[in-house]
Image (cartoon, rainbow, N blue to C red; front, side, top):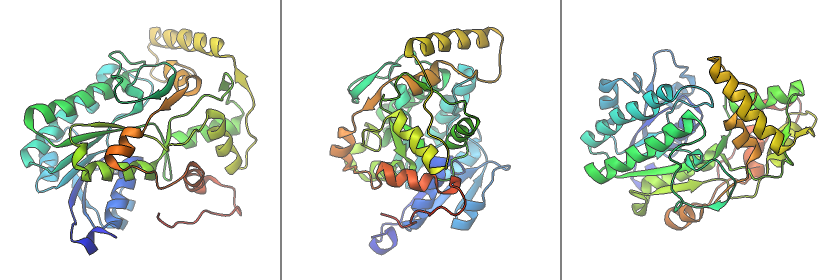
Length: 346
């Protein structure tokens, strides 16, 4: 049953709506009958938002007036925007992921929004093997890379506004996000698979903390609605045991490419990541090296996190299985003539 039929239509202000997570959040909000505002830069591609009838607030994360207009009269705010990447200085990431977030939190507090849902990352945990890690484990003070450190600081800022200014905020921590309209992760992986340059780190049997974007959006809406979500942080994944080899192999199969078999021993990969990253930083490289500590974390570590808190407090049950999510995510990358997945909603 959607919002229109239940009489509970909300006004939702979404940042990052031209990106993967924010775009799917906007699409789902419109489908449910909510009124949607999206913060968009003047240069952003907005054809999907225009197609869905989304109200556009032109500006960026550092535009105080645009943030005020977006938050004014909003019931909920979904902060899906972030500077993402595994290379760059802490100052660069902190500017948009922390300093600009403070401006958005000020706007949300002043507008007295009913719920502020912040999309963080499971990367905030320590860069080590994880086996069922839950939210009682604190984020790492010094994460492996500038991006995840800025996400750690952003989480702390959101929770600070909840404690000191009474902002009804909740934080969701997704893992590795995949889905339709992804312009970065799947295209890069496919490029490496086509070039034959992809290699696993170790056996490839380590767990991957993946989440299909529509499962994440489902969790965001639950965090907006559940009274027990306020002031809390939630790990969210697909809730299935998916290995790096399973994920990459399925991407290759659906794209009609050979499944990769090459691997680099874990100790060698770890050493290479340290040495190559250190050299690139000394040389002041603006582009990430082919291997660095963040990529070792993604491919080399066992990343298994508990989502029991989200199940218990939010009632989170991923609507899509890994198999279904992967079929949908890869539909636009499949060879011509291959069958396409159904487009029905759960």
